[in-house]
Amino acid sequence: SAPDQTACKMPLAAAACAIAAGRTRQRRPRSSGRGGERSGSVADAPIHACSCHGPFARPYRGQCLPSFMVIGSQKAATSKLRWYLSRHPSIDIPKEEAFHGGPNPVAAWDTSAEPWLLSTYLDAFEDVCNSTRVTGLKMPDYIVMSSRTIQLFHVANPRVRILVTLREPIARMYSYFAMQLRFGWSPINHMGKNPCMQRRLRELLRAKEAAALAARAAGRPVENESVRFTSEDIMVANLHCVRPCYRNNASGLGEAAAQEVWHEEAVPQCRNIYFTPLVHSMYALHLRRWLRVFPVDSLLLLRFDDIVLRPIDALQRLAAFLNLPPFPEGFKVEHGRENYTTVTRLLESGAVTRESLRLLHDFFAPHDAMLRQMFGQSFW
Image (cartoon, rainbow, N blue to C red; front, top):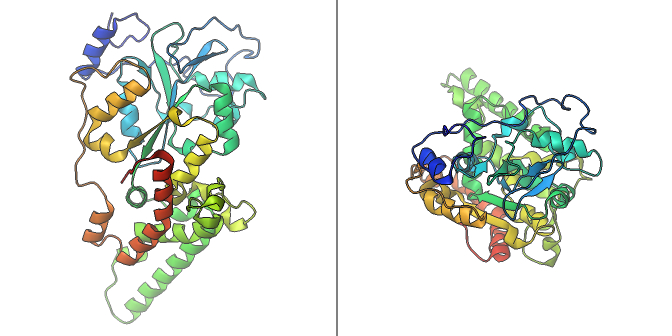
C-alpha cells in the first residue's frame, strides 16, 4: 500500500518509515463540505458500530471523538506542535481551517441540545473507527473557554487529554503583536473590539498624529514609524484595560484570588476582554477553570522553549502521555533558532522600555507564582 493512502491497513513500521523520510499523508476527512448541516437528514442517518482506539478516545454516533486537544496561545508553538503530531503514524489532527464554516465550536459540543451538530463537527476528522489511529483537535483559543464550555467537553469525553503549550507571557505578547503589525493589522478593529482597547488606542493614535503635525510645522523631520502603533503601545494599552476587569489581579496569591475564574462581565469596558492577547497569557486563571472539571493528570504542559529547541524530547514525552507508540527513530524535526524573542532580548534591543517591562512583569508575577503553585514546577 502507498504511504499516502490513509485508509489502507499499512503496518505501523512501514508508516513510521515513510513519515521519518519526510513524506506527508494526504488527509481524507469524512466530508470536505463545511456547511451547517450535512446532506440528507442527519438526525435520521444510520449510526454505524464504531470502536475507537486507546484509553482516551470515545465513540459518538458512529464516529470517534478526539483523544486529545491542543490548547494554548498564538506564538506559543501550537502550529509547530500540530505539524509534528500530524506526521505521527497513529494521529490525525486537522488544521484549524478545517473547521471554518462548520458548526459553532461551542454549540457543537452541547450534545443535549442538537446532538447532530457534533457529528457534523467531527466530519473534519479522518474516519478512524475500528482502526489503531486516534484524532486530536488543535484549537489554541480553547484555553480561554468558559467553565460551561469546558464542562461540555467533559460530558462528551471525560477521558480526553489536554495538551497545553506555554510561553513566557511578555515575550509571547510582543511576538504576537509584532507579527500582526507586520501583516498590516489594525489593533483598533480586532481583539473582540473591546471598548477600552478601542478608546485607548484611538486616543494614542490622535496623540501620535498631533505630535507629527507639530513637528512638521516646526520644520523637523518626521518618520512614518512615529505615527504607527508599536507592539509596546498595544501591550501597555492591553494591560491598562485588563486591570479593572479582574479583581485581585485574577491569579494573585490568596484565597480570594483563587476563587476567580472569569472577568467582570457587568463592567461595559470589559466586554470581550478575553479576546485580547494579554488575557490569553494569564495561564493560571484559565487552567484553574480546566482543573475544576478535569483531573490534573489529564493535562500535559509543554514549554515553548522545549518544543522549539528540544523537540524530540518533548514529542516522546507527549507520545507517552497519549499512550501511543513513540515517534519513529529519525523523525524529522526543525530545531528553532535560539535568538527568538525573550524579555532579556527585548530589553537589550530597546524594543520595549524598561518601564513598560516592569509594569508587565509586576502584573504577571502573581500569575506565574500561581502557575508554579498549581503544577509544582517553574516554566520560565
